[in-house]
Amino acid sequence: MDKLLIEGGARLTGEVAVSGAKNAALPILCAALLSAEPVTFTNVPRLRDVGTLLALLGQMGVGIEREGDAVTLDAGALTAPVAPYEMVKTMRASILVLGPLAARCGEARVSLPGGCAIGARPVDQHIKGLQAMGAEVAVEHGYIHVRAPRLKGARLVTDMVTVTGTENLMMAASLAEGVTVIENAAREPEVIDLADCLTAMGANISGAGSDTIRIEGVPRLRGARHRIMPDRIETGTYLCAAAVTGGEIRLTGAQAASLDAVIDKLIEAGCTVRGEPGVIHLRAPSRLAAVSLRTAPYPAFPTDMQAQFMALNCVAGGAAMIRETIFENRFMHAVELQRLGADIHIDGNTAVVRGVDRLQGATVMATDLRASASLIIAGLVAEGETTIERIYHLDRGYERLEEKLAALGAKVRRIA
Ligand code: EPZ
Image (cartoon, rainbow, N blue to C red):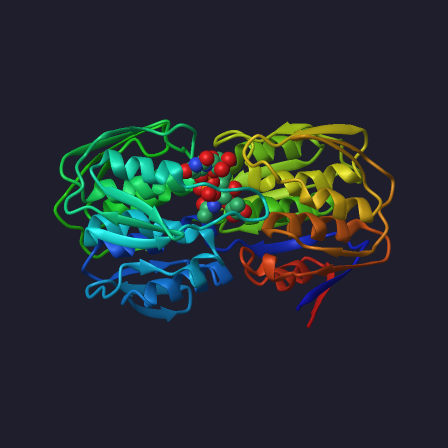
């Protein structure tokens, strides 16, 4: 079980390149199932979750070729429209094969993803939308069985904003008969990136990025080439790592426009942030001001950056209130931060963080992907050495993490 050792105190400076977005790559790789022709994606990050999904697609009969950051998928001869429990349980985003398989094959058997550390993560909206499009769906023995000889366009209104729900239904609607309108759609940049990819494949989609997406189904989708957008959460994570150390960094291959709410909070905390095409430059004060925040669907503050900002607030001047409105159990990093000396009080989905002058290094445990990132941020400024256990969580979503941090001057190393 790998661990990460961090020696606190280094000020992060320099330049690092942002990788392709995990949460754009995952739905876009599944979109390959919609076409009988090969599709090539570039800027695909080398992440554990991407590897897991490629293995899942491979066992369905999808041909896979990887060369550098490019992946070519050939779903011309799908053999098994099945996503088995053993693979889905390790990555719940596997649910993203459901819509494409239903639309392309007319049937699918996908294991219920089950919950994860941050919440129950139900998929009822995915199922409800497919049923509204004429699919027969039965949930038996832990599997979702879908039969849909021909999906029909429908007007879908999701009960809440759901990112992968919007993505699944948009992919299914691409091959449905007639027009589908998704209301209350997720507006995340990753939804737009998927829509751009589907459009390149011949889909007829308008409104992606707004809360109403219109999809006119077409008989088939063709091959295409698409470059994955930059990872805005990786970008935000490195901005926080530099900010907490009073550092100054340049992130290349970044997209400032997808991070407005996060950059606004970093500026409120006292940082200077400048965005040029493809580059974000941040300079931090010696001590940050505490910033309160409330997570909500895009374009509001992203839940995936909540843990990182809790770490910032642990050593900021003043007190901050953090409200998590998306997931029911996304404060597990708090108890680990308290082991480092943080002053955090949790009351339901609200955390009050009072900045302390110094954190003390200790051994802590990663519990989920973004919680792990918050422990790294805290370890960068804690006195002495911090050991982070179970860092396989990190490898799911951050490419070459310790290499990139070390390039910015962090004293970090991985030990098996
Ligand atoms: C996506 O998860 C992201 N994952 C998550 O990133 C992100 O935190 C989340 O969106 C919110 O932005 C990927 O894109 C692969 P939701 P998703 O459906 O789609 C409830 C990371 O760290 N809900 O938008 O699973 C749900 O329980 C990960 O990279 C239902 O009740 O999230 C939650 O409370 C973590 N029924 C809320 O909606 C449903 O059918 C939003 O969830 C679907 C969702």
